[in-house]
Structures are given as C-alpha cells and as structure tokens.
Image (cartoon, rainbow, N blue to C red; front, side):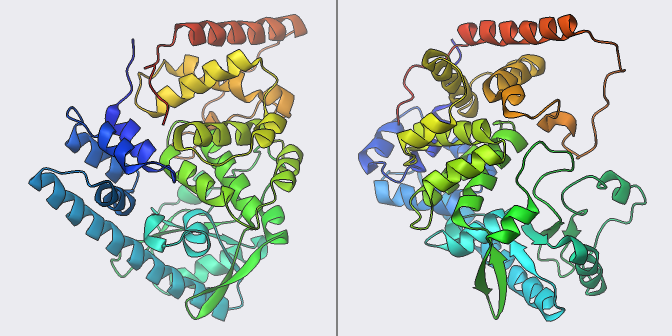
Length: 394
C-alpha cells in the first residue's frame, strides 16, 4: 500500500481555518519528521503561517527545530515585505507613465483578501498590463535598470506565452517580475482571459499609487484553473487551497455567478477539482450545491475514487508513470465534454517551450474512438489499483 507523508498531512491540516489545536498536536505525535516538515513548509513558502499554527497549538518543538522555525519565518516575512516594497515602486512608476496595472495572484490576494500580507507568500510579482501598453511597460522598466536575460531566442520562446520573459530587480532585492498580457498561453481552451478580468476589475491603493485587482469571482476562477489545469493538480496545492478558503468566505463572492462564469469559460471541471480537493483536504467552505453544478458527468463512486487519487498524490503518495497520470487527469477533467479540443496543459514544458508533437497521421473515426476508449480503460484500471492511506479525514 502506498502511504502519504504524515508531514504533508500535518501541513495541509494546519491550513484549515477550523482545525483544532488538539488535532495538530495529535498529528505531530512522535514519528513526525521535523526536517521533512520544515522542507515542505519551505517549498510551499508557508513559514509565517506554520509558525503561527505551531505556536497556537502549543506543540513542544525540539530546540534546534524551534530555532530553525523562527529563523526561516523571519527570512520569509522579510522577503514578503521587500517584495511588497518593490511592487509599490513598480506600480507608482507605471502609473506615472499612464500605464494601467492589474495585480494578479499573490500580489492581488495578499493586499486585498488576506488579513495579513505575510500570510500570503509570493515567489514573484505578476502584473497584468493592457496589450497596447505591454511593450511600453517593459521598455520603461528596462530603462529604469530592470534586467532581462540577453538572449535572442528568448522573445521567440515566449512569443505565444501569456507573459513576457521574467525581469529581475537591479537593486539586488531578489525580486522577479512578470508582465502579463493574458492569463494563460495563447491557444488555451478557456473563455476567460485578460478582457474578462479587466471588465470587472476593482481599483485599490498600492502604496501611494493605485492599481486594479480582479473581482472575487475572477480571483477564484483564476486560482482554480491555474491549479487544476495550469499545474495539472500536481503542485501549488497548499497555496491554492488557502486562497480558495479565503475567497470562499468573501462577502462579495457570488457563488451562483461564479458557477455561471465557470460554465461560460469552459472551466467547470477545472473549478470542480480545485474546489472539491480544497474542501476535502483543507475544509474550505465550498457549498455542496456549487460542487453539484460543476461536477463532471461521472458516477459518485468514480468521483470519490478520483478524489482519493488526487488527494493521495498531493500528500506524498507514489506518483504513477507520466502517461498514466495524464490519462487519469484527462479522464477526470473531461476536456472533450468541456470543449477543450486537443489542447492540454502539458503542450508546453516547464520552460514554456512547445512540446514536440507527434508526426501527423491519418486517423479514422473508428481509430479515434478506440484510442479514447483505451485511455479511459487504462485510467479506470489504474484507479482500481491505486493504493491510498485510509485515514485522510482532516
């Protein structure tokens, strides 16, 4: 039987808003590997939050572990504060040049949705710029000293990507900035992008300047698609589920409107899996009626088995072979029913380069039906074989 990592279970449990301190103490009983927990918290950029949870739960840490927790939390909070300082400077500079800026992902969420900015980490700064102003924004920041690798092939590499090549802070602050023209790479299957976000954006102060942020519905829609489609439900789960938990309680979130927009955007299954996993693993308060309207056209027993597979995968269970993992993802996401055509998130690799397509071949309707049936049969067989640690209730 494959097993989940108890450290991953503790970290996911700690993210739940309703978790009891006694439950965290129970999960931290002898046998928890503190070094592995610290490594996972580092990977998820969760140290400020983890530090709070450890303190609130009254867990007695070994002295060296306690020292590392304090040290890493201090470094993380300093880094977050520095990124926000850089963000305020960039927004002011662009606004002064008449360029509209819309904050995406962590930049938007940490400044408008989290009670404390330090609790929503950012790896970089993601800013959406109107298409007509994108090059001007880049040139202005380059003139200010921001750096982009001098590589003739880089522009071609990012030609169909949704943001320009990453730019780096010239002052040594370690900041990375991505100027987005859209939300997903060109040719993505969704009816949701920059135009949708700009249409319902909200203006907010950013230091002494102002910028825009997506509406609560669009922040949630973007988070769902980014995790379940952009990351293929493989990584970024802790932050994604925390974002879902925070947005699910927002006073301005319209659940009925959200589902309607997800349907229009061809993102029902993308939203379903993010919300269902966030609800299961982090107790995000997602209404049952929302999940029912978004649900794939599969029997409940199959949906439960798929949920078990994805949950175990996120909590450290053994990873199936790539082809099988993709077949399961495809079976769960129902791209055919959602109208996604042949587009898949792995059409571009981790460097955002288009993957090499197979040589074109003549394919009859019968061949195509047989191929699709074989993929479904393979993924269904895998589901019956996947082992899962039985105690996953948070």
